[in-house]
Length: 240
Ligand code: DC
Image (cartoon, rainbow, N blue to C red; front, side, top):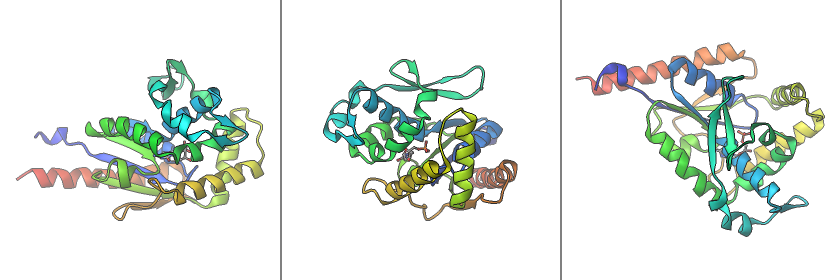
């Protein structure tokens, strides 16, 4: 194998609003790797359930959602204006809709449904087979890509995360309060880390990145250093 062809897989997991996708996108762009936002896929399934009336008064029709998963097709398309990947649900670009507070408040219970996870894992694993991928989520280093050469577990102080998410949502014109954002983050963290199916947990071999006091560039430099070292280690392992 040519050294130039050596690529690794990078798994990024962590609590909500830790800046996982910011870091994952920046790393993918620096390394010319593919990026997959797995949270967006769970959000798309949640939006489907909402639109099809499979959620009423905050209650999920779990059996019905599980039965209708074959009707869900999730793809990504490049947005020429932002240069990023937008989520397409059954042929419709739903990037904006999946970031709403309504979806945010239902996505954790939807993502705790076993059949939903099994469906999404299939496409995530297919993507993981190509090397040169950065994937972010909650179970990437533990379940989806347990063999990833670099695993990063991100964390940040709760109030720092609340403020970041609040400012982000306000900038998008969403009418939310700090209290709503705080409540949503705490509830999601709790459900995501205590659910039976693939709970969020730090992989034993993960590097921990607490970015409470780091700028996006500082955290990128730290993660890039780890990635280059992992690539170097892999080169040394294959070169006699
Ligand atoms: O990263 P995010 O906030 O867009 O993710 C939305 C939700 O999806 C999150 O609260 C939990 C769920 N999720 C998951 O269970 N497993 C993943 N790999 C990614 C996200």
